[in-house]
Image (tube, rainbow, N blue to C red; front, side, top):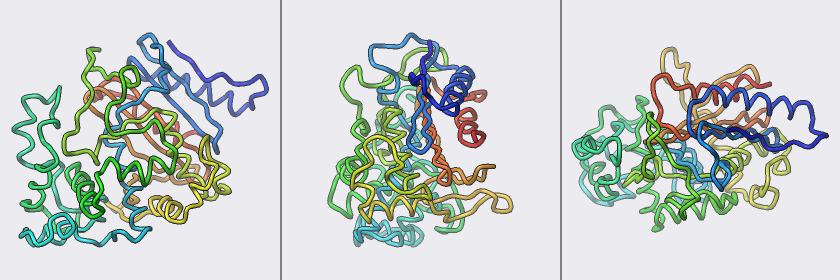
Length: 367
């Protein structure tokens, strides 16, 4: 059950080769629904496939759960608010979230930058998250842990490390960032994200809550059983974004515009107007591409504010993957060459899963 966006008879050899490459790659992914989408300087090729019969709505036009691949959206939001002068990276989260509230001295030192870059010292999830989550781990682990509980857990936290000294991936920290930005601006997170990121980039098919029936991709367990839509509870900023693969490409194309590619005219559909010439948005897009830290053995792992940053034979690649109870997503781009890859699959991740490796290969091994 596969389809590749039809190419005109005059399609360039490179476009035809890309279509073949995507078809071959999709064959390596075991999932009911697979979408692999590539943009080269705004020219798009989309392949859809999977083991299930396609439904009435094309797979590339269904909203997919991005899971942790939501974090680049949170990162761009923070970068734009900083460019607008509304917050600073070095603002202390506790001071913005609960002014005057007594917190541990280490918590007091945690800044917005620490929260976004996973250097806050906070654990991946609050300690008291697990007792309520374990009984429903495969159905709804986050829904019973609302926003106010995330905030309380942060204010009473005892970080494992001094902020800024160690990298530890934390959904908890990025969720706190979301609540902090909402408090600092007096605007709910969902509204803030729409105003500052989704609307300016014309991401009309991107949202943080399930849409009308028939517009959402359905996730599956490893045995093929459908799973309900994800409820992220109070962890919205860390993993609630839902987007169509086409909107995912638009988001990525905004990051390649102006990165040595000749500016906004090189982007995909909907991004040729004044949006990308807005100085605060342009500054934010440039800021999130810039490497800011290194970690790991001999500091070989490089990160921007919100993207993993790796070398490749064709220049640096920036990417982020995500997984939910029944879906997976991958976002990546090469700023120097204008290549962007968006991928989705509707089956829960497992140890031998090839999804991320396949999508990453498209990004790093494609000339």
